[in-house]
Amino acid sequence: MKIDPDSVPNSVATAVEALVVSLEKDDIEYIRSTKGTSGHFTIGMAIRNSWSLWEKETPIVQDAIKTYKIAHGDDISGLIFAWAWAKVRGEDFDPLAFVERYHEHWAKTGKTSIEAAGL
Image (tube, rainbow, N blue to C red; front, side, top):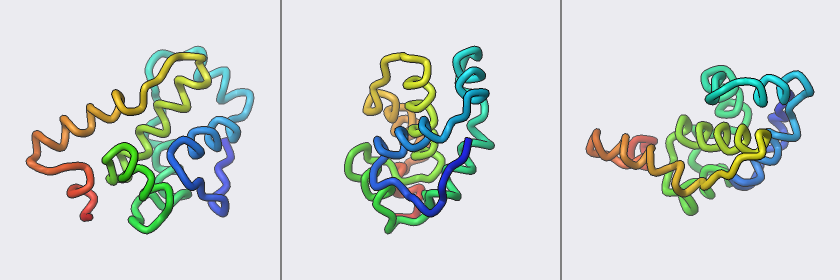
């Protein structure tokens, strides 16, 4: 996987496409042969840092807030990661249904993903 930190996607959906395109043959084979979405920490960190998911001003974060009501960098990278994995595997994926787990998680803490991100 080779993420270009100088080419930050403008939306979560374009980030998914960029991540899938960045995958090398070995990455694709690994994704297709494993269950679940292992690698969230390492790949998720690369996504968060390369695409500035901790910065509220970036277009991708603004899209995540507007479209999915999430702003926490871990939540955004998790959405991108899971969506890309589903795409590689040819599985259906509903991003709005997926982010419900983040809304439920943050609700238990008395916050929203947006509040948890300090926005």
